[in-house]
Length: 283
Image 1 (cartoon, rainbow, N blue to C red):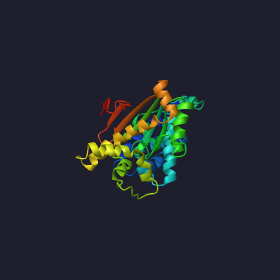
Image 2 (cartoon, one colour):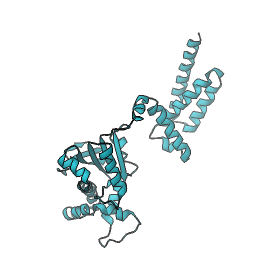
Image 3 (cartoon, one colour):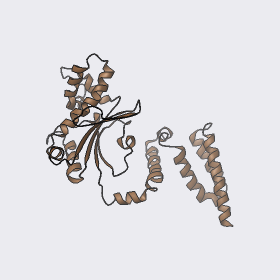
Image 4 (cartoon, rainbow, N blue to C red):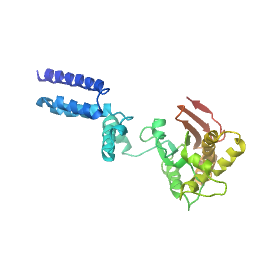
């Protein structure tokens, strides 16, 4: 009897949830959740179920695309984000996280831009443990230098010698502000910032190539070309690291690939180290 009662109550809760979802078109997110909590708390026997249901509906109604819009308070936003992750990811893949606790064996080292719109794990659907990721302004890889940009060198060395990755992917993207900054650096080398111009100058050779080959194009089109050409410079710079060069040229245990993600068109290009032009295009 108790089982039938609980089943009936759960069905009522589900109906309430569906009603609230529909009402979301009329009411604010906060009002909908408040109304649901009030309805559920009217019956003492539903309190434990209500609490779980409210948490689940909160996560469902505040999907990944809406969480940031719902919470303006940074602490609450972080809490909401973690709650969503734990319920929708961690608790549903507990075996995966238990395995990862024993160690990581990623197959990819990915260089991506710090731009908030181009998270490689999101774009390429990498699961936890699949990719060792380095993000910086304009996804650049400087040439080997033990005294400069050592953080990048340490990441590459760790990925190859400790994690034994088999692929390095350098992923550029559309509308890259770092690339536009590089394209805008005056020829006299004048700077407007403490770090940005110095960093993006890593790929100044790519800028020279684009200016020579595409001077007839608009500034925006030149930037698009530079987004891809800068990736090629980074691929070349990777070979200046002895352990990378050995793995690619001698041992042939490592593949280098360049990519460009166009989030405006929803397209992705991929090419090999030697081709420097798109071998694959998905859109």
